[in-house]
Figure 1 (cartoon, rainbow, N blue to C red):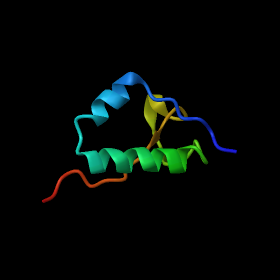
Figure 2 (cartoon, one colour):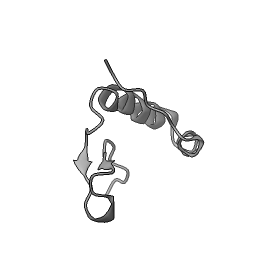
Figure 3 (cartoon, one colour):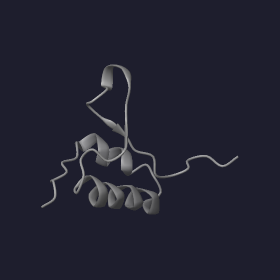
Figure 4 (cartoon, rainbow, N blue to C red):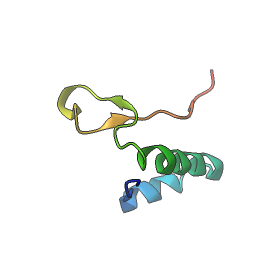
Length: 63
């Protein structure tokens, strides 16, 4: 059984500013990976340690 992912309205608003293929890729990865394992990603350090994980899926800049 997977977990249900609930998005804040600000997340959906931010995704609208991205290329449609990139936004779809991000949502697909979140739905696939996070719904099965909510601890997927790299654990953050400092004040956010244990609260959130860092998830990087796309190389944003070429160069």
